[in-house]
Length: 501
Image (cartoon, rainbow, N blue to C red; front, side, top):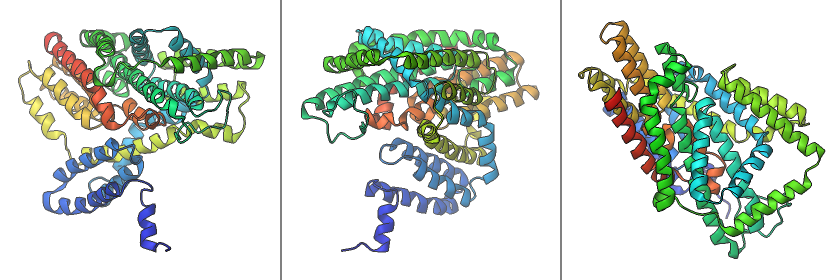
């Protein structure tokens, strides 16, 4: 029998998502206006945050852009936020939007060089402990001078590259096979299923170590995270001053974070410790040998160009010569111009990964607009400012950490540093107290926020990337794998703030 129009509409709504998921989203949309009438905008705003987090938590059931976007549209329609506020939030984060649009695409055109370099690292460093430590440390160093999202984009490109190479072989095809869908397991041979699952676990642990590394390094310098630059601008700190003031907290956290990496790989707790299967190693070695044998003057010239542009990228970002996104656009122009990529469809593939997440981030700004207009964080800020000066830093650290876990750490930092600056201007706190609270705000928004993917943009980017479903990295699994790091980064950070700030 042919389906009715209502049945067709229902099947089309959120596509192949489970029926219970569709029903839940509809229930949210029905309940919110009623709750606004009964409980008011403050309670409804907090419920909306919970609903949006629900869509992020089930990102593998349905990409959060659609359900989260419906919730954001409804929030504006029922008056929880004004459209111009959403625009203002997006405008305030325009550098981040530019970064996602262009830098991630720029990294796409550098993937040949990255795959060669990291394949050599993967195959030459046989110890999983040392490999994990290296990934975390390199991610930390790069994030301190570049940007966590840029480093995460590199990690995603590497992960997809490794996975695609082995998936071809596991599906009974040769390494040379070009037309292969590595997202479809239908052709995977029975003898390779167990190895594929172990390889997924190996990549999950490696990528999580790297992602946490971006947080360890990103907190250290004013260019590491967007909110760092914001805080440094308000406080009037330069690069060296920022690093020195943060060091009493960030250096112990960095050391303990790296030790945690080694302990997790040693114990195998929380989903870590998976080894690279020997058969997968052989496949990757064959891939490396094949790529080396196929090298010619043109391919080597491409790698040289990518290496030169990579150096230009590092210099441009380290010295903050321009907005990160504009540097990314420069990378695209240089790599495509000198490597002969001139057709429109060739360029389009580079933007497939970044633009859905960019759209999701703008939707997230709508939720942030609700937080801003309904003053959802105001009670917490007022309560902390009313405390004694000697306990304010640790309480600011805790409050920022908790709120950053459920919201956006850039927004949390923006709200808190603005309030603290207002208190300084009003003479309610001294300059020394302001510096202490600014340090607590920066470390509080950067460290405990590793607890959830929505806490940090880099983590959310990893969760919603094309790599996450390939290696079965769900929201829940990501939270579980982040637990030990959350305890260590949050605990050591809090102890350092209490002891040294």
